[in-house]
Image 1 (cartoon, rainbow, N blue to C red):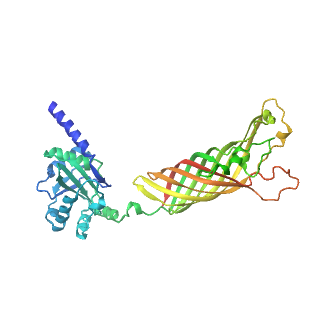
Image 2 (tube, rainbow, N blue to C red):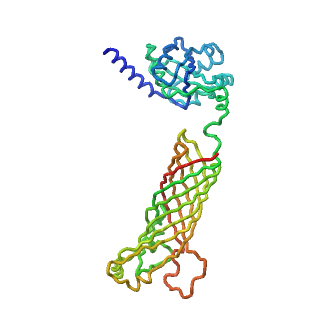
Image 3 (cartoon, rainbow, N blue to C red):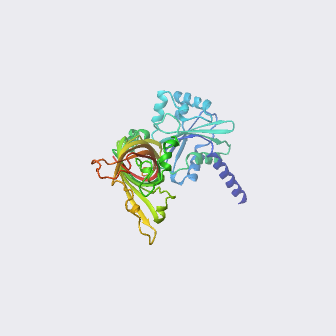
Length: 420
């Protein structure tokens, strides 16, 4: 009993090592009740078909009743013999699938005619076993692995089965199903969904100073302070009155058509403290003063979809749009304090400001429905000039928010769905 346990542990250790010597690995199918064809140009077969099938059933319960045999048809055929000898001489580490691609049209045709049979090519080099797996509709091996070589047929069968046939087996296709699969496009060129929609929430940051630009552009705005509730050195920018840097939250909904052009509707919220001059004694009466910024808008989106992996779709995009900004004032005095006349005549913002925005980002879509969105851009705001200013208006300040620009960056969590 002890000897059997030691043998089992040794087998497990060898099998575990076998999976780590992968030259390359692309997706391939493990069929239930599979037909496994063993092909070699060596004088001795590394593993017998019988032992390989027994190993497959031990390692993978879902594989059913596989049938294993030597691929005598290819071993005797002159076209496959030439390709087999070439593989024997050229299999090596650090290759990719295209390096081992069959070039002969006759050889490519033979591989394409495999249907749902699986071919494993075996060759021994330097006390290692090179294994290449072929299936229909591919002129290159689906995977090449370098496995430990042993003269023990049982161990060798387990090593091969663990390295290549450990995943769950799938039901073999009917002739009609196989024909349909053969006509499907490559996953990188699948038909683009007619509508691709998403909804998301995001959190980030907004600030007036643009990265990689001189600080002197913003110094006056950043250092500006409000005196007597309404006076600053320059009233042209909103950032002379409120703090330019704040957290930014948003919710949004978007849709693209044919994976190229689309639109996104959004709502954003941020809160900005008033930039009061703390040396001004008038503010001794003030408890707090801030402005909540609410923004709604729409962006035109230009995107491109890439199927990076089977589980991941990447969609970089650029956007341009317009927005409306609303500032809701929150202000309060200390308890028991009567407001001064300056408090009663404090600065008032316009009801709404409008502006443009542009930027870029990327969607990372996992398993077709769940995604992350990293976005960065620049937005502007300006005073709505729907009517001429009143002649009775106070001379100072004259224009509030005539020219306001800021940048933003945020990370969103999204849900996606598509319509064909």
